[in-house]
Length: 185
Image (cartoon, rainbow, N blue to C red; front, side, top):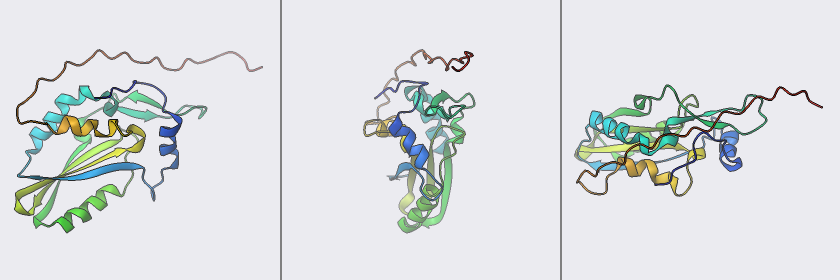
């Protein structure tokens, strides 16, 4: 799993995804996955939360540069709460694929809240044939071709046997920018 450098400025390319975003053109990507059976919501949330240390970027939010002299920074969200990122939705039973697509369109339409880390997941219950859907959104500034699947890799196990998780690494925060009190020449 790729490990991003934490607490750093966004690259020019990633910042561009933020600068170009507007309510009519959200800049997040996502997917809709459908699973047989009912996924227990509380266990699902607990499972993701137990693995969040594997994805430290998903616990960071965007902090604008105070004077807009540089690109925004990734900073740890001191108020990170998994419950602000994983939601429960229900279709009237038996929900069809068409109804799921309409719900997905409503979920995908708004921009992500920039006051918290830029991702969320909705579990959708009530689908016909006792299926559960997962709707995932991640802002494009957070992902590239490789890291785009990192969240899915911690949510979806490859085998039914539970694998031991690596221990969390000690975070080495990048120091905040220093203030320069020197007079301009």
